[in-house]
Length: 273
Image 1 (tube, rainbow, N blue to C red):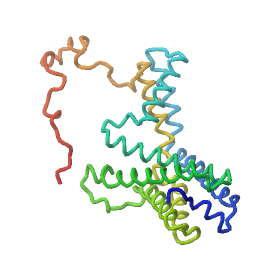
Image 2 (tube, rainbow, N blue to C red; image 1 turned 90 degrees about the horizontal axis):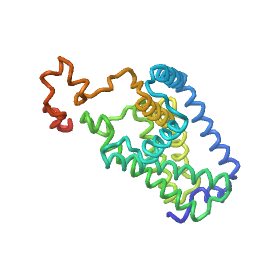
Image 3 (cartoon, one colour; image 1 turned 135 degrees about the horizontal axis):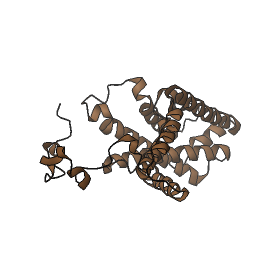
């Protein structure tokens, strides 16, 4: 299966690459339009600009261009490329499988279609590996790490289309693509399911979490900037073990207390249902 691509079979069945290219461009246009609509609805761009201006006004330390480039690089490497915000290594693995599977699958699809070469052996393998990674990551997330399943004890089959549209579309796109490839039925029901799944994924951006992928790096960068320039979102920057804090009268009974005091550090994951 992994040596054959349904894209080449689709072309051989009579669908020109130009038609496929038009479809891909429509999907890209949907993502752009839906993301802009989401930004206008949630006022995300306005929030980031206002937040940046407020942080600049409250800044204690002046950051140079080099500092900002270093923070941007650190954000890309830690928060984007390696998903460093996930402290649970298994959860991070699930995220990386899904993210890189999505990138490989869609990149290979675009290169094959716009290069009019759906039979390229290397791209075919990348396409299948990406689809498999995406399927494994999205299904793993759904049954193990989805919030209402992991933290609230709900059944993974308890579906809310508005809440779960993104996850369902990811699973459907990857699984139907693999079925389409395995069966080799280029223009059959499998192809129809792939079309429906991708339209749901890219056309449902406004109602799903898809657009948060674009906002997340900016939010991570803004958080690092605030920490570096000392603005700290108007939150306290002194911790209990610092001398300035320990001199306060309210800290009299806590001066010698350990930093990890309290039974809260022994708490278990809330999964006793």
